[in-house]
Amino acid sequence: MNDSKSSDSSQQVRVEISLKVHPTEAVLAAANILWSVCPVVLEKERPGRMVALMEVPRDQDPQVLRERFLRELLWETLRLKIAKRTESIRQLLLGRALLAAEPLDLDDDLSWVEEGSQEGEYLDDPLGIAVPWEERFGDEESQEGDVLPGRSPEDRGGQPEPQDGRNHEP
Image (cartoon, rainbow, N blue to C red; front, side, top):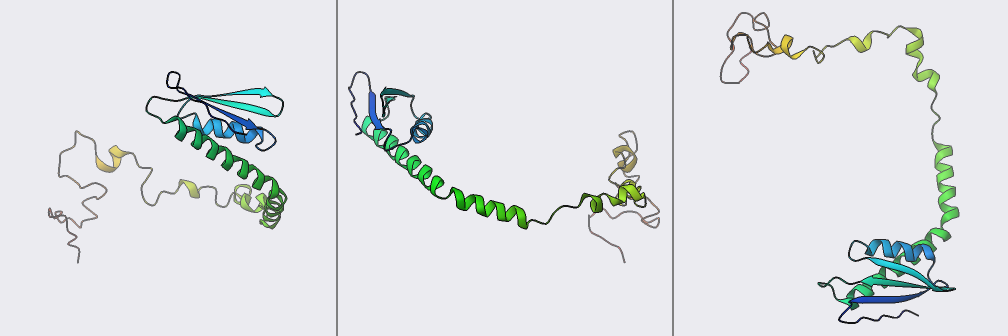
C-alpha cells in the first residue's frame, strides 16, 4: 500500500510501492517525470516493495506532490499494460505495412547514371542560381544605377528602368 510521511523540517515525501501492482519500469518512468519538479530517490526496501523518497521544494505542497507521483505511477502502469496487450496487434500492423510498401527498384532509379544520357542535366542552370553574386548583381565598385540586378540593358530594350517599382512592359 502507498504511504506518505512528511514533516515540516525535512519536507520529504515517502511513498511505498508494491511491485506486484506496479512494474519497476512504471516506477522508474514516474520518478523520471517528477524529476523536473523535485529529486526522487528510489530504494528497494524488501522483496516486492520499493520506496520513493521525494525532497519537496519549499514552494510545493507535499500532499500535492505525493498525489502527482501516484497519478504518474498509475498512468505509466496503465500505459505498460496496454502496450503489452497490444504488442501482437502492433507487430501485425507494422508487418503488413512493410509488406504492402512498394519495393524500391534501385536499378530503375539510377539508370540515368549508367546510360549517361542525362549526365549533364544537373549542370543546367536556367534560373541562374549558380551564378556568383558579383557576376549577377555587380560588385561594390560598379556604379549604382548601371543595371538592375539580374537584368541587362538588352533585356530592357535600351529603355531606362522605371523607378516606381511597377512593371511597365507593354
